[in-house]
Length: 535
Image (cartoon, rainbow, N blue to C red; front, side, top):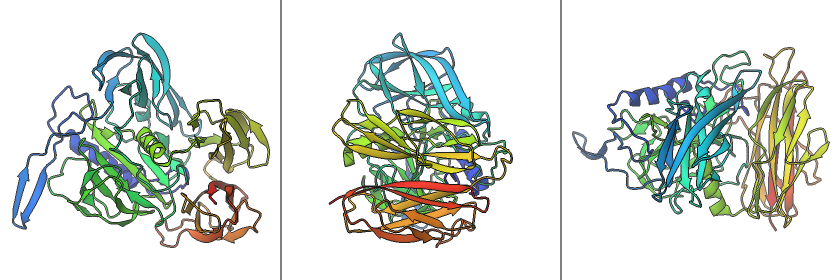
């Protein structure tokens, strides 16, 4: 992320968001001042108001008109108001008639933040309901693939316009059977296992961070993808073939009025679709403005710099022209998911996210239905809770009487016996005193891909909102517990903020690693890591 991206998230509170919001707002306001043609509907067919510059000498700059985008997406984008319909010509030349019937949004009782948005749509005369973002993928229906990326209700209690949405909802449509991104044009931006650490993905609201508390009125909804990872140990790569238009505090001249906002920890790429790719919080940067980078080429190392809030992650976001003619987020979850499947070919992916936020004494539904397997046969869902109890089923209900940050284990097994694990983060606020918020915690390890038995793995942890106590690691292999002490994130960007330990797993297997720390009130912060170890 950067201060103009997703400054913070539920995993790590108290990041400074003041200039984060100012920069996010500024990048869109600047673009709105341009003279744009009306009727732009397709994200990538809009001509970019960029300037390609060849620096001949310090005193002589030769500018040229930017080239037209040469790479077109496989999907079409439409913004619709309630009751509005439109005919969409898809990438294969077929047509689909789409109508927005209804929008329903569910908000939490703590901050009135949108936690779930659902739209009823009619496609080619048939009706269905779609969830907007929040780890949802496009679905096949009525001869098309379709998803909803954002609804207007997210604007009701935020100062930000990161989406450029002016109507009730945004839909994207692909031909049935089409890839979501053209094969060979997009790769995963981080070299690590899927969900190797915490995430904050599209439309998840930040929680009590950046000076926010349960009583704060304005909310920052995370519009891009935050991939948690091990600081300075995870490679960040170019997701596409692209030109580096900004790196660190340097930016190519002529990019005024674009989404580029240079900062010392940020790299912006511009691809042949005319899309901008922001990579933020980098520990180190390996490219410079003007470089041409190939898809998969290293551009830096994942870190916690800039407006990260002190947790280590890559903020990855795409900005493109939207049907409103504004710059706005191009939802990237499906693209990253599809690229990871191509590259790593997992048999199963367990999904227990997004994170949950409730008051003590309330009941929450934990949901594993977004999990996936290459084998289409039914999956088995097993839950293990922090108190040691268990449950079976894709969805389960769970009551939390005490404040804290809890991590519930989801195990998904396919018909062939392949397993995947994920963890549902549940943040419980003290009903009697909501402003006293329990601590949160981030853990990460590296390498998360192809770790071998006997190989040294690096584990890093940082707890937020408390300096009391210590972190306690249980590596799940019968070895003695290990105690460390991170800094409590008093200084968000402290170089030694994470407590570090090393561990070797003697045998191959799937290890569930647990780390926790409590504050002076005894409120726990618990998280888990899934560590697959190969022979």
